[in-house]
Image (cartoon, rainbow, N blue to C red; front, side, top):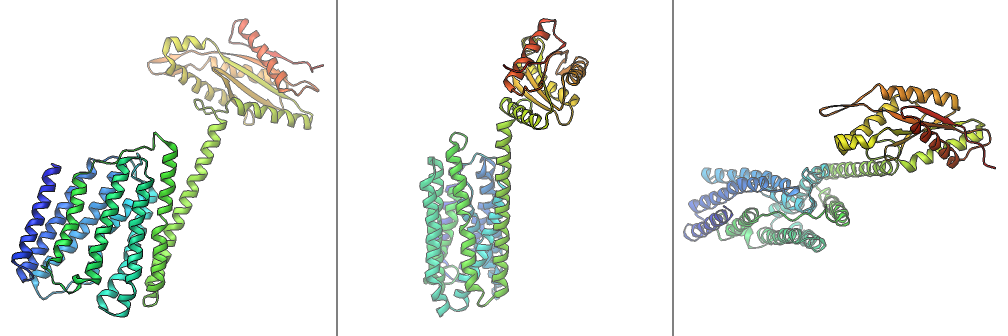
Length: 486
């Protein structure tokens, strides 16, 4: 199918060559030329949508944006055909803007990471899309209108140098990013887009500042416009999608994200520069462009900052919480124990701990599978938390062992709390797929005695009490008050 689409585009362009050669700039020639370009646009819409359907990741979203851009181009081209039919009608100036909208899709290829394997479009891309439209508006009022209204005037001549600089900057950005890409598919995609950018800029320059200005519709210059429509047909039809490397190389993924953020600054900077010149004649328009661009940039910054805070919180949670049960992990629960012992030392209080072990946990894994064992641990963690006081701390000590820290609690109070906990677990079977699992726990209780605030000694005492509970038949509570070390 790809070869057929490319062959059809090539045949249509050759037909355009014949139309220009035979009919020239006559009324029939102008109508024929505009009709052929309309057919090109109508061809691009299904081709880009078809490419989007067979693409993965961000490539799918890029081609959807391209389909939207070419839909607007088709609308503008249809107006041109309508003008040819009426002969005397003239197109409004804003139609030129629609003709140029395809460049937004081209610019978005610079702002979408071609190596990303993400299936959903980053919300930041929508803000970049708005920036692209603002840039196109600025370029229209900065370059196009002065050249149309003051042909050969000082203003048209004065924007030639910035026009060249802007396009060199944008084209160079494509080649620069292609050089930094980590796989061949992404490099090839960005280089093709860079070359397409160069070709389109050359054609635009010839039209606005070169021989194209004096030529009528149906002249040889229309073949260049058609050629610019053949290129995306070929790109879309031959699109295979760049290889994704983000999942294989986290550092490369981070670098690509950084580059995306960096290149996203190009449009806002150019918008501000163009608005300085536009404000000399259209102050309200220039102010609106800058304010909307600033709003998009601010929203982008805030969203990025929010993601950074969420990422930091996620890393902090991963560092302190158990990945399976969601409670404190081994290091975090021991840190909490040290902190509570220091507080008890200052306040001359006490700290009790409970070392909890799931009885016959290996049998659960052997009989029901490790998935059921993981489910049992998650459910047990929740059941334990239901009984504990709001200021008690629960952590996974290791394997099927849990550690509870009960501040301002002596041995008698902690033993009562442990008994309620044991009874609650024994009376609450764990429901899994296909049935339920009866579970019991053994608990060893220890509390800091007067002058004894050593976490190591307290843990040893709770561990000894736990082994006593297991040796005594399981599903029971044993306690031990450690003596101060001499």
